[in-house]
Length: 253
Image 1 (cartoon, helix red, strand yellow):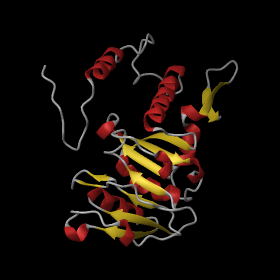
Image 2 (image 1 turned 135 degrees about the horizontal axis):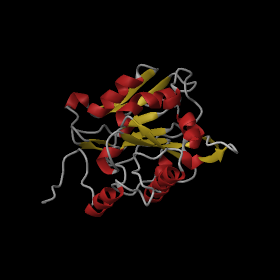
Image 3 (image 1 turned 90 degrees about the vertical axis):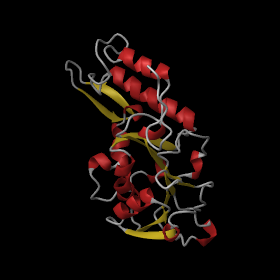
């Protein structure tokens, strides 16, 4: 078989050794007699998989203990709503930079939950350039500043990380994550759909500074609340068993 290489904005090519290992482990994950898709998410084997995935990501991306790492469903587009639900807190507005289709989608969703200030836009030029940051009309009391480092459909990419002062910087790094060294400490929250550089579609990685947790609006569904998901994540929990039963659950650790 001749391997194809996809240079489009979609899924990246995976190394053959990775694919071969996945194929070998599909029927039997390391002697368990089952695939990873069949085992309990509470099992020691799956907890080990989740812990290893987080550990590897932290090492590759240089993510410190000041940040929580969450693996969520729905892809990056689901975060267009999840982010304002979690970060608006007692603020009434958030700042957004409009540089393409993905920015516009994020702006539209955030507008459902609060006031969106489009602090800069290149739409009038057909998204052909990024406005100089000196021209951005940012607000010092915004809940956060959101931007899309690389607009894959239009092909417009930032060559700098915006300065946001005390306002948390939020970035959609779906097509940027793990493609180059990154100073995570400059950001309040990073999110990335896995299908570009990390893994299969449907998964989204969220890296959030821990001081931003616990600010979710009351209307936020439990499974979209970063704080709730962090409590339920195996890497931040201890697995406990009730003596004499097969019951198991996770508790904050």
